[in-house]
Image (cartoon, rainbow, N blue to C red; front, side, top):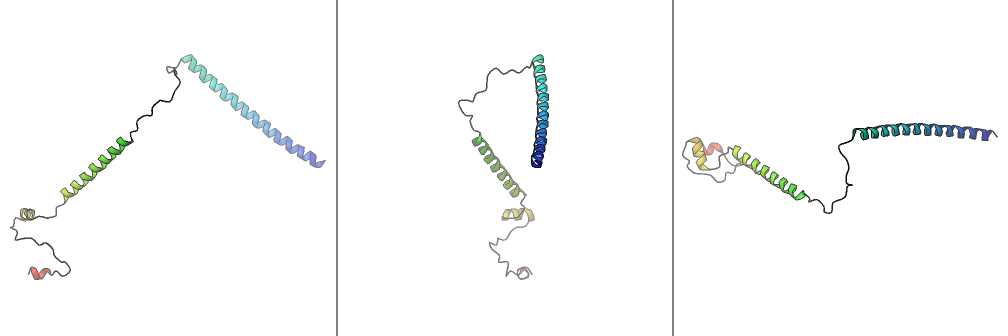
Length: 129
């Protein structure tokens, strides 16, 4: 009997909680429904300038993809950027590689050129005393 009474009490408390939740949910629903109806009535009174005349339908043909165009533009852009960087590096490179440039920069006549100098065994004092 004690068990039946305690079980009845917990069931009653659970039922009361559920009824309270239902009451809050229904109050929220009524409040939202009133707001919706108010907004709908305002829209009907004011009269919206946008009205739906046709329902949306999917197109019969797919739109053309612009992936090839974007890929081509990306390729052209990267090629142009690489060329500009290489030209910039070459333009800013002031090393002397050819004899006429050496003669122009130093104002001296060149005697010749050396193709290869082995730097490990090269003694500068021996060649230029």
